[in-house]
Picture 1 (cartoon, rainbow, N blue to C red):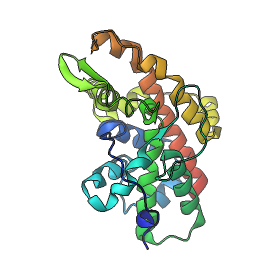
Picture 2 (cartoon, rainbow, N blue to C red):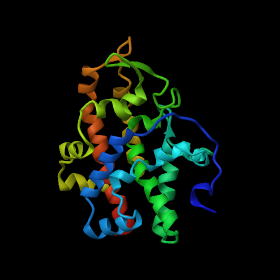
Picture 3 (spheres, one colour):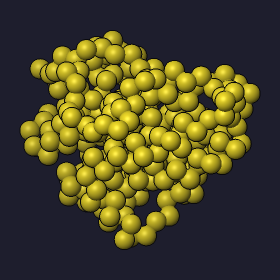
Length: 251
């Protein structure tokens, strides 16, 4: 049985798409920038030459297929404020999914088709878990229920973090990557060592800032200015850590 149907999950509609297309491509491109030639070549073989950047949105693209509905809950996890993670619910979550895909890819027992599928999902999910609102508080579907006016247009908080701030920079994903992919080797080495629960706790730590909204929920330049550094940091960390995981698997 194919990997993506091996576990029957409760279907949960979240209406969220991680970072959005450009954000995920930035994560993929950063990861590619920090791979060894050996690992880059191996991954190119698995993906039939498709870049990490272009493969990064695969798990959102397949949301159009009902047979993949069970993977919906794997894009996020829920940890209420003041609580600790106690394990995935029955339907699974992003933490469990990342660990599972890493284990399967390390096993070397996958068919070419299943390896490509698993790798594309892993690329995407490591991006997702670094988006602060993909570690939800359990109250508002990761900010989807928080209605805001963003630059005089109706939106919601999750969408602002997925696409609004990023696309508002008016940069291609390669230009965005060049802008933020500037980091010391010492910091790279530290981020690659961090456990997945460090990634999760980091996302949780940014909740007060993310939810710091005016009473009228009208946000624009000030909100962007206050949050762009955190958003760029999370994209950069996701890319560096994705490279580290891929080096661990294929190195």
